[in-house]
Image (tube, rainbow, N blue to C red):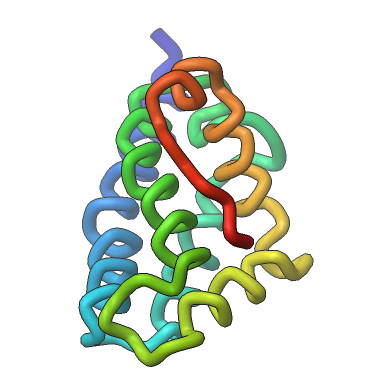
Length: 126
């Protein structure tokens, strides 16, 4: 019902679909550098409020992000992709810095949701 939250959710989803996912997938298939992924992560992070979910409270924007953010962390922690060996770890190491604290917290919060924990099998390697 809140038009501002609805607009935030739409903007987040558009950015996710048009910028973040293409940068991430381009990196995974070896077409883009890890710096491009980090730039896309920084831009996505700027759309997040100081705390909470993409539009403040759990919304369709977060539902749209879940499959991508979960696989992002899983693939990069495992260094799985056509990018140069070690570049996945470089991205994850950079995400662990204060520069990306908000984005990493957002991803961790998503992964703590009961629905996520009940349906996503993961082995943490980083």
